[in-house]
Image 1 (cartoon, rainbow, N blue to C red):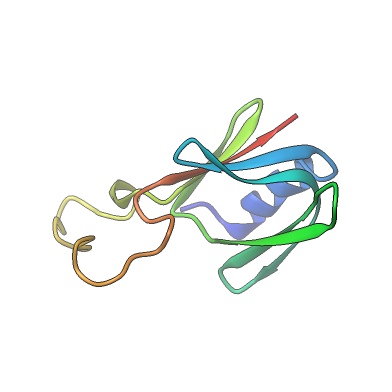
Image 2: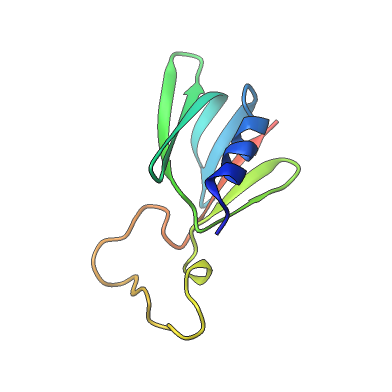
Length: 109
């Protein structure tokens, strides 16, 4: 698990760029990334769209990676399970988060 400092440095690098937030090949938000705040384990991204500013909350990921054109927030179960605890999370029991066992991508130009 990477520290919040590394994640904020990644977000600093893409400020004022056009971005798309994508999950499961579906564009969730699109616009110019103008500001972000971090409170506890929630990052709030402020995105400027042609009509107004929109905010989007993203929870702290299990792992994060940065490529030439995107930041990948990894919420897959494999990232938090260890070999001794095969049943640490039962995704079929109860409710799950909207990103659980998925990867969220922030593509930028």
